[in-house]
Image 1 (cartoon, rainbow, N blue to C red):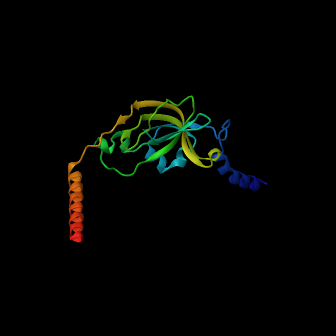
Image 2 (tube, one colour):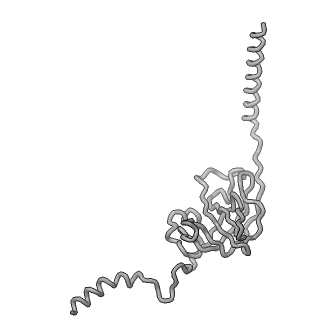
Image 3 (cartoon, one colour):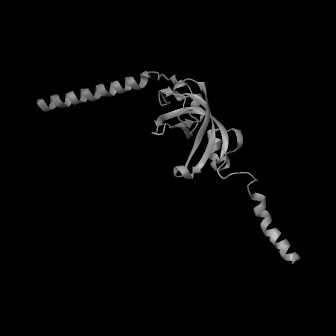
Length: 188
């Protein structure tokens, strides 16, 4: 009997060690996990599942307003958020972003997301990371619980580069000259 009891304890011990603490509810937010970058979040998204995190970046793409009042957008947290190429930033790799869902009462009312000629609002979003959320067909996104504006949107000017313009006009002129010469030859 003693051996059976010890065997049963040995079998159940691992399950008891990984069981949820008393009072924990399934799907309840995990404790605050501090600031995390988008690349770190994307490198191991399951590690932050259900955790409250703070993510910094630029709101880009589109502000998708839904009938229920929520607003969905993308938060890019790469080097281009801080230093866009048109503002003198350097190529440092791909864009990295995550989806963000804002409740209607939390949406700050931004009117223009970032794009090629506009660096969007630079924000710090606090929210619960929903990794493969079953309620949203497996979508992974940040469910915003707070947002802080760090910098207003900035219009980006693209400088006129004269070399490609001059070369293009020169080639266009050469093509027109060849076309005219060919036409005159045919007409004679």
